[in-house]
Amino acid sequence: MQSPTPTDQLKQVKTSIFINLAMSVYAVCTLLRALQTHVFWRILSSAVGSVFFVAMVVILVQKMIKLRKAD
Image 1 (cartoon, rainbow, N blue to C red):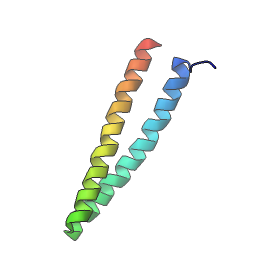
Image 2: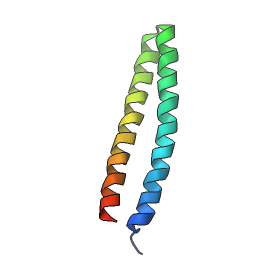
Image 3: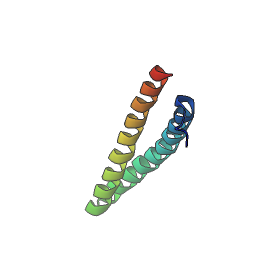
């Protein structure tokens, strides 16, 4: 079994970035709605989701930069 080429990995990372950006936007919108409700558990769970997806985007962008340098 062959390992994926850097170009294939780059395509996968770009797709993952797109998906995580969409989820980040959704999570931030959910957080803003939760802040309006003043319900603690909604704010907490939305904040955790927002931080997670934004962090994933940052990690994937770093990985994409690393793959571009290797290519």
